[in-house]
Image (cartoon, rainbow, N blue to C red):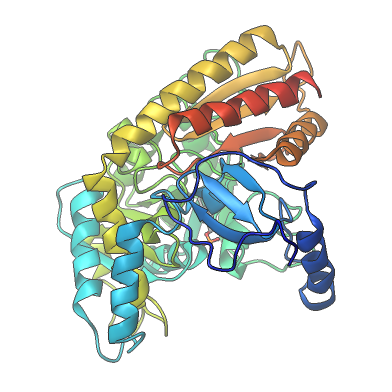
Length: 453
Ligand SMILES: *Cc1c(COP(=O)(O)O)cnc(C)c1O
């Protein structure tokens, strides 16, 4: 360690100094040393957006091993919604760690599993009777939602849409739209998956209504898959990896209505949008849509791996005992962390905070867009906001510009992520604990990056 490196006792959480500060070039010497060890030990298939090695994080910053403090506009992909090392999460997980770390919920259960299921029943849309099953990752939750829908309906077909992202396991690769890097070379994929057009207002014909886009989707599925063959429609209410695509108003409601009329299970994949991120508990709340099944993961565990499928009791209970589960699903430390994360969201008013972050960031990005024809679209909800870059005057994607802007941000101490089927979108997913000044500092850097790219 060099003299300027942070002490090994550096503690994360909201007490960490909330400022952007670079002490070395990015990545610094200690991160470069680790990168060399990494390439000799870690699969090249696992990549990193910003190869600085984390030492501590909290509030709205991430500090690396060289002592550089970055503004975090990514939250580890929408996971640390309540901030890194949120005090209640640390306390609850630490307490649980000292009691027992694992029994396997399929062997001897514990109260926190049940309580988390009760909480999820209370916060998910709809006041019907619900059940929950817990898992470890978003992909696992989506796979299990498909299993449940198939088992409950006796049908096998699964409908998904363009630009969708549902994970990297075998079944979820089939549900995911983008070939590289998610699917290329990894087939063959699971059968009976049907991909239909979606609503992408920026790229659809101007004025295409949500209802008309939904009719395009359902007509296509009726023609190519057959509505009576479909067990489920799996859809992200706002697409994540696909580019933060917010569908036209009414699109989701019309799809849900069509699913109901045809006995198809409507599965909202809220792995990225769920749990306060969009300025409500769930993104489907904004559309008054009540999904039959809803998947959650990322923001649920306050940084610990946990995922859930929550939905109609009659669907969830259609699966025979032993049909769902897994060794680690609903791990007690992760359950304790999730309960503490939900409590933090309630007590600290983080749903309103997500909405406020969205208003501030969107206003600034819209002002940038008004002055720069390379910004084709600014969109999102709450603290899930994106900028889509194009060649001026049209909709031709400009992925090189998105990359140049992101690289500039990274070199200047702001962590942003890109996304989109065309790689031309920068997405902002700040922790909801980010102070206003730091958010605005991050947006200043983004504006500078654009001016210089
Ligand atoms: C991230 C994501 C997944 C996959 O979650 P993992 O925890 O990475 O398996 C599934 N669906 C959506 C919408 C996601 O954003």
